[in-house]
Amino acid sequence: VSYGGGVAMRMAADHPDFADGLLLLASDGPGSTLEGHRQETAMRLFDNPFSPFARKVRMVLDHKGLPFEAVDALALTELPGLREVNPRGEVPVLVDDGVVVVNSADIVAYLEHRYPGAPVYPAGPAERVSARAWERLADGLLDAVLHDLSLWIWPTLHRADRAPDGLVQAGHRDLRAVLERMEGALEAAPFLC
Image 1 (tube, rainbow, N blue to C red):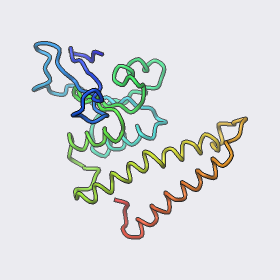
Image 2: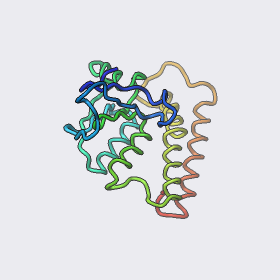
Image 3: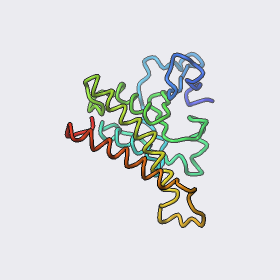
Image 4: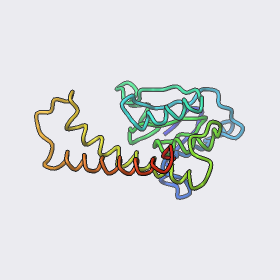
C-alpha cells in the first residue's frame, strides 16, 4: 500500500521488533526519505464519534493541545482511506508525520513518547504500571461488558429478540465487580492512578 510521497508501509505484525499497533514506513526512492522530514500538516485521526477508543485518543490529543484533523473514517465515503492505513478497517488510526499507529493504547503510548508535554500517564514507574492496567481493564473487560449490555438494553435499539439467558445478569455481575474494584482503589487514594 502506498501512502503519499512515495512512502510504502507494511504491518508491524510482520516484523518481530515492533509493536502490533505500529505501521512501519520506508522510503521507496531518492528524495523521499523520512530523515529530516518536518511535519507539514496536522496529525490525522481516523475516527468515529461512537467509538470509545477513538474518543480516548481525541481526549489525549486535546489534553496535550495537539492539533489534528479528525476524519469520520466509518462514513462510507471515507472507508477506502481508512483501509489504506488500516486494512482491518478499524478506528482509531493516527497518522503523524509519516508514522501510522493503530489501536488506541498504542496511539496513546506513541503520543506520550513523541509529545511528552502534558503527560497523561504518571511519571513514577509503579503508578504508570497501575495506570496502564486500568487502561487495559477499561479497553478490554469494561468495554466488552458495556458493549454486550448495550446491545440488549439500549432503549433506542428496539430489538424484537431477547438477550441469551443469563447474559444481562452476567454483564451486571461483571460490571459490579469492576466498579467494586474501582471503589476499593479509590478508598486508598483520591484518583485511580
